[in-house]
Image (cartoon, rainbow, N blue to C red; front, top):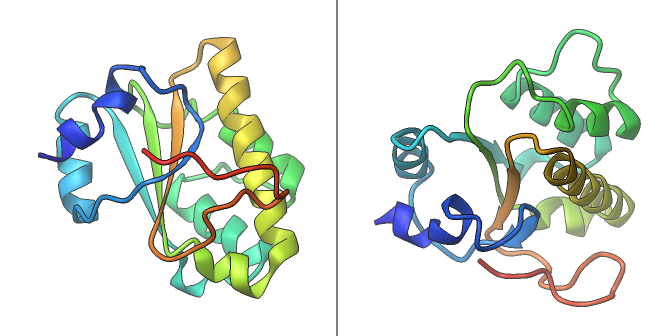
Length: 153
């Protein structure tokens, strides 16, 4: 059962943040099971994400960013820190094939990882519905800054 695999997320035993998720559960099954408990799933197909603008545009589409989104890292952070236009007791961004960006644009990968991490932490600190970023598929196991491994869920 997918929800059992995500128990640490749903129960809050793992803090909101960025995790490598080793599950092979189909994204639609993840979406159904999280929706059953009031959470929103936002699948991000990373196969075509080869640079900063690809990532920003795909996230803007999947997360229905407002018209004021400016396609910059600051605007990305601001939108992730808000998400008030989306329903859900929590949010899971399921980034499939995240390694494509890491291989093709290491700088954008590093910036994305930093901004996603800062946004999940800011949401946690301000008491907003949690945001988890689950990285799945082949990709680096180490953080872009080289300070350790990306935690696994």
